[in-house]
Image: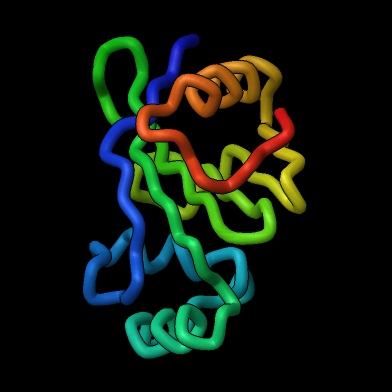
Length: 125
């Protein structure tokens, strides 16, 4: 399995995000249910520094199809989702990534190491 990071972007407000991106960005902080007003909640978290340094990449497979989104936050946090869903396939806490399978982990590691531009958040794969 080979994965590649594409479409690197950073966010400073909810207005810059697609709806599924807002849901993904807030998922880790609201696992019991997302708030009704995603924009307001997300902007508050960004302003208060609860989540900052938001980096997002789409992740493609060998065929060029987007299969995942990979989010990277301050303090070495990451979340890896199946494309445009809230289905997690991995993530990171304090710079230590994990994935549901060794194959996916190895593919994310290689994609992270070869990312262009580089991801600001350091990960210890």
